[in-house]
Figure 1 (spheres, rainbow, N blue to C red):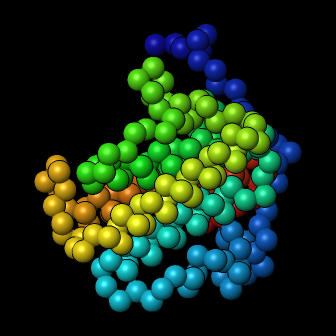
Figure 2: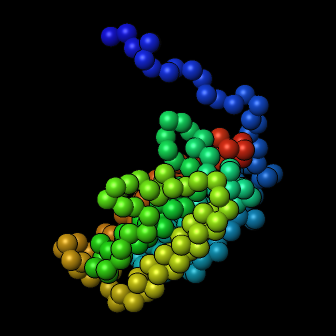
Length: 198
């Protein structure tokens, strides 16, 4: 079937964009290992809980780093069309996801952005407004801190959840969600200003 009349196959790449990094050790890294806050910044890992929390810390920091140094327009830019994703949208989405984690674990937590009429409001509401950026950053940090308190209060990662699963499974799912979206953030950021990062 010939779809050339209905499908846009134009190249949307920005030929003026140059890949760059501040790393002097590896050119495909976000920063030099000694300057990367994700490296060795957490508590010593001695058990399963520590390993899972360290992984969560690592990916949260990665998302934060991918958003640093950008203005509201750059954060809100949907740089990999036709996707509605933006770095600002990712902050809003992960704030929503932190709350969703606690909702699945049994805490009554209403949605932040999504509504029955707009299930993608975390993305669609990510507009180039400094107040929207500030709100997203604040809410994401607050929700992550609330999740950390929730996990700290759980005596056992094997605790059963309302759906019959275990807290460790839910925590692993949350880490996976961050890891997945940090990969998106790599591409989004590189398309915004050319900065590369693993």
